[in-house]
Length: 120
Image (cartoon, rainbow, N blue to C red; front, side):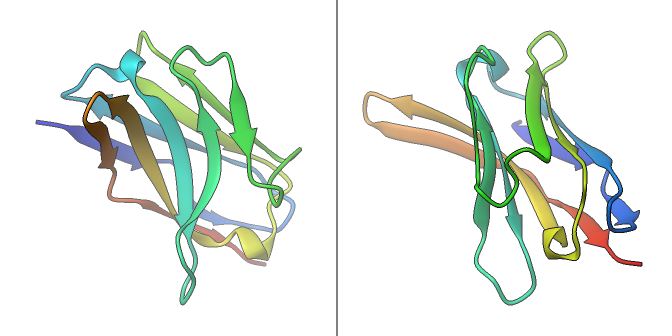
């Protein structure tokens, strides 16, 4: 059974930091690129950051560059999102995603999400 379980969300003041974790099970973690998405109220889900299977390459949305860092530990089947200098605009539900291309298309899995609220 595939599972992606996010944790680490919560309420933080502007300028603060949080680290999100996503624990994966039920699939070959190191064969999947991992991403964090977020969805704010009344907005579409947006891609925040992506990391390749080995962790050798990362990409970020312009809105979080220089403030967020994605990383992974393949030995622990876990991907992280370190968030700093948080702004109220970062308030959203954050989702973990696993993605892999196949010969016939692709496979992707989603977690249930964790709420991040940035407010004073």
